[in-house]
Amino acid sequence: MHMNFSADICERRFLYFLILPVLFLSCLPVTANSGNNLSTYSDTDAAGLTFGVYAHIRSTEIYKKFEPLRNYLERSLAEHGIHKRVHMKIYTTYPEAIDALANGEVDFVRYGPVSYILAKRKNQHIRLLAMESNSGEKYFNGVIAVKTGSPIQSITDLKGHRIAFGGRHSTTGRYLSQAAMVKSGLTAADFAEVVYLGRHDKVAYAVASGNYAAGAMNENTFEKYKDVKNLRSILSFACVTKPWVARKGLDAAIYDALQAVLLALKDPELLKPLNRAGLMPADDSDYDMIREAMLLTRQFDELQLTFGTYASQRPGDIVTTIRPILDVIAAGLEAEGVHASFNIRILRTHTEVIDGLSSGAIDIARLGTASYVMAKDRLSELSVVAQENSGSSRAEGVFIVRKDAPIYKLQDLHGKTLAFANEHSTEGRYYPQAILVRNGITAKDLAGFSYLGRHDKVAFAVAAGNYDAGALRSTVFESSGLGDKVRTIMRFSIPGKLWIARQGLNSDLVTQLREVFKSLEQPPELQVLGVSSFAYPPIDDFGQVRKAMALSLDFRNVP
Image (cartoon, rainbow, N blue to C red):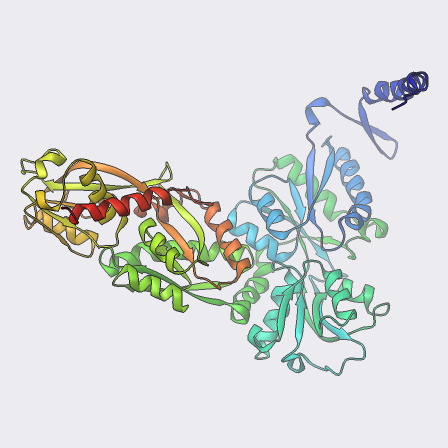
């Protein structure tokens, strides 16, 4: 390769003299011009304030439209003594935007009403700054639109057609439009297809192109495209205007100045991106109509999911333990824009749960790893949603004896009776039997053994003196209230239980479930299970589980 070194040196010198003045200027204080005043931003204010919006249209358009308003906010705050830069952050998804506000990652935002309500659920301490004024009113309209030449005249005519909505968290593009449909007796089942396209402009284009018979959008988007894209409204519905919201803990002086600046905003040019006449005081109760619509919308597309597990302890105790966790998961799905409720089925055996996954009678199941291995051998398309994490991604099983028993180690079990839980239990059969085999103990070395089915039955049988020892899950033993009668002689670790989705369950739903499980960090509902969090993908212990299952066969099948 031939290289012209002389030209390269000349080019570098040229760039040096070009960049040097820029570097010099960049070292000077950054200023913002506000009328005849010059406000200087010090190094201590370098972080500035972050103003959050989300992209209901293209991000490039959002930036172009809001840049003059951002600049106004920066200059006007300086006039109120707040010398901070204002940085704009554009979020491309509703969940990302909601989490940013709830977690304090953004100082103030302009969001839709639903996003405000969902963020408020996550953090009660976010504060309303103002709400937008629609010519002095708190309301504007959302629209369900069709192509101008469409024979569809009302939303009841949409039955059997394909329909497009905006984002799953969109106020007009989803919640209020679906609430209007529910009031007219329509649900998702009445349509050939229901899709969420994210941005309102995408909905307008999709309807105009004929890909969908109708679509929901805000009135601004409809007015922008109705003539150029030949759209016609078949229904309009009222919506409360957008709120401006401050994060929890925003400095009081900044909050007061920002609120004053927003309420004083009257310049029509600066208000163009809002398509509003200004801003007005806001109260949380202004958004109660949205909360009511969100409840009504559940009737449009709520998923009825069945959770299944086996009776490892009293069924009533399992329901009491599991129901709060399922409620947390349902709330997490709702935060993702998915409405779901869970029914609970407690089955007698591991095999019945696997049969339920196979037939589709069970959508989500909680299985021990040995049961999962058996299920996976039968049903290759099962999906792991999450694995329980007990602090080290592993749970525990225990060997127990009565407190007064002269048994202190496994070798003392020779000639004794032993109770196991279920024949398919990871910690109530396979692992303890594998441990016994590794310690030179098999069934012939015992006076007898039995499978009692439930883990709690093992604990009570040992406490009553019906068996000399037993093997079961540690959390069941610890919650049995038998600590004054029974003690452990050995603890052993096992892989955490798995939450499994049946084959054929919607793949998007499985992905959303995984995200919800991963987001759960030590909620109190998990403590009774001895679980601190969930992991995905699961720890690959299935090879060890298979080895334990194979060794357990040697426990009984001896020469």
